[in-house]
Length: 178
Image (tube, rainbow, N blue to C red; front, side, top):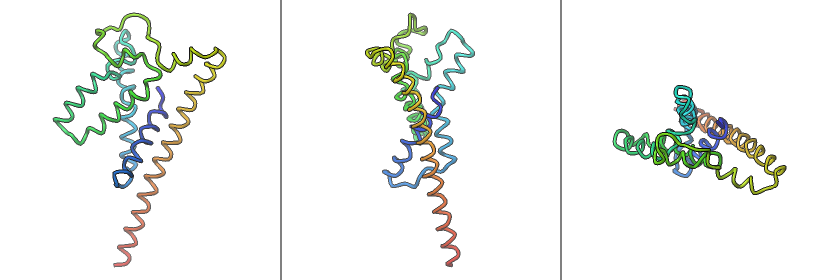
């Protein structure tokens, strides 16, 4: 589970989208909710794995099938919540280089994914390189992913708090002028 990577890249995507849409930055309390939803697929699948040890730790909540069902339900019940389904689905995009691709298609291969893990895309690329180089790049990948996530998280919170402080001071100035 890449805590800072998943949170940071999600918040790093949400913040500029708000700017492009011409809306004020997301408030801090909402960023915290987005961060929780960015980690939710790992939390749910790992909890399921603890309850049912034979179930892989990336299965139901890391499948496209789950997100299609969630999308249809949320669209009918509460369309404004689609952003949370999108945030959780973005988690899958970030996991693509590291996960068995068969998990995305669950349950098309049955309820138990038999056999050894299919080589993830990122690992396949690394196996084409000499061993000494691939190990350093693979470890560096995790480090860079987490450090970039930490930077994006700090940046999103900074943008959010700075904007809200500006609006509060503008509001205070307007009330003092009256």
